[in-house]
Image (cartoon, rainbow, N blue to C red; front, side, top):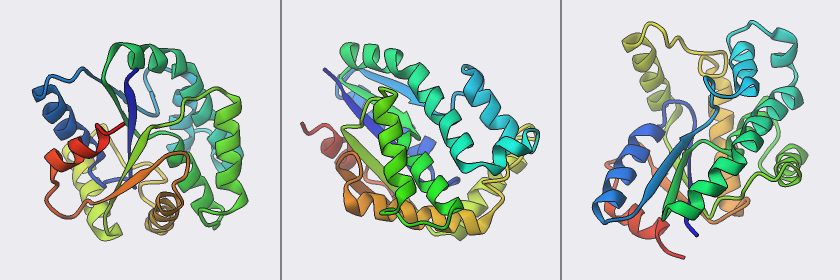
Length: 213
C-alpha cells in the first residue's frame, strides 16, 4: 500500500513547485508516484461550483463557509475511489491541497484558530464521507508578502488565471497561514513537516522523510 502525502500552504506558497520536485526525486529513486490536485475544477461538478463561488458567480454559496466547505469535501469524496486505487498501484501518491486546506481557510474566514470548532467539524465531515487520511502532510510556510507576490506574478503570466476572491484577500491569506501552523503543530489528521517555503528547498531530505513508514 502506498503512502498518501499532501502538500499544503496558502496561495502562492509554491506547492506545485515542491510537488514537481518531489515527483522527480522519487521517480529517480525508482518509486512509483501518482499525483492529484484539488479542487478538481475541470473534473468534478462540486469543484466547478466552488470555482463559480470563488469568482463571484454564486455569491450565496460563497458567503456560506459550510456550503463552500461541503462542496470541497464532496469533490474529495468523489475522488476517494481513484485515490484508493492509486495507493494500491503506487509507492507514493502526492496531493496538492487536501482536507487541511478546507480547515485552514474555513477557520480563517470565521476568525477561528486551529483548535476551534470549525476545524474539528471538517475532520468529522471528511471521515463520515470516507475521504482517506494522509500519511504525512507538508506545510510550505511563507510570509504573506512573498506568497502574494508569487500569486500576482502567476496571474499576470496567465491572462486566464485571474486571482479569485480568496487569493486577493491578503488578510484571509495571513489568517489561513496561522491556522495552518496550528494544524501542523497539533498533528491534525497526520504527522506534519513544516517547510520554509521562502528558502531553498532540500528536496532530497524531504523525499527521505515522506518515504518513512
